[in-house]
Length: 96
Image 1: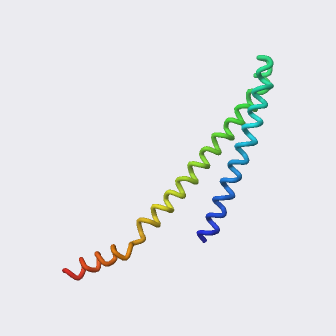
Image 2: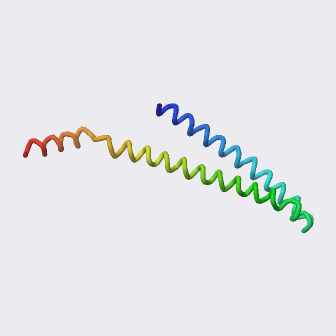
Image 3: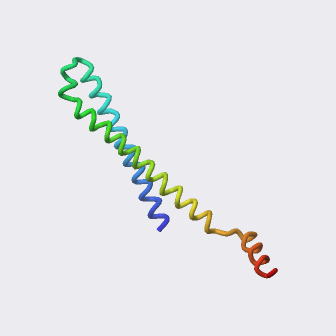
């Protein structure tokens, strides 16, 4: 299951990065187009806003993935006891 999850996370990251690259190129080209005249802003402003929204959504996706990974790692480390921890707990129980 962990291997499958890692694979899916890898795919999601690849997709996010690919989407960001394409969107950044399109936004850059649109900026060049709009810089020619003020009239082009009226025609292209909505499109530019959509490109920026796409970048914002990809940022949100990255934050969500980072949160999931952080939770998974903190859960794994907090529930796994080392042999020394187990022995110390056993010794404490036996003392009472």
